[in-house]
Image (cartoon, rainbow, N blue to C red):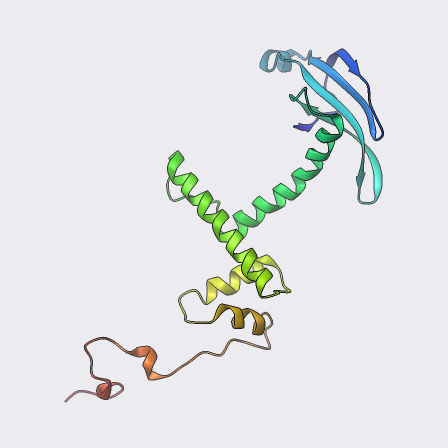
Length: 189
């Protein structure tokens, strides 16, 4: 599914009936020099009235799906923007652009891990009624990841510069096993 180019050359094989906001529904065969060689199959060209920024505009969609309704093809293309924004959030906030491995299995593991992290963070934001952006919650969680905090209270109290989280700064945090607490902060003689 893609938008057709204005300079695309093609032959109309069949004209199908159109309804409501669908202007035309055609089966076509590309006849350009390179396009016919690279894609010799029959395609579907759907022209539809689509609302963009509150104004109706005629867009043409090119698809290899010959069974779906033309209105479904137009609405699926409109849904693409939401999908692109979703993957942009994954790539920017969860660092999905740099893969640790380059084989199929490694990439699948990293994508599934990012998707799981995304769902968990969205659920956490929903449960705590987080009023800020998704990038802000990922930055907050990344900043306190290795510290002990109650996440629900952290998300309810944080979010602005004026209310930083309370950090516990007592010697108990510096406890090391096999060392006596009496020697903390003093030199051994």
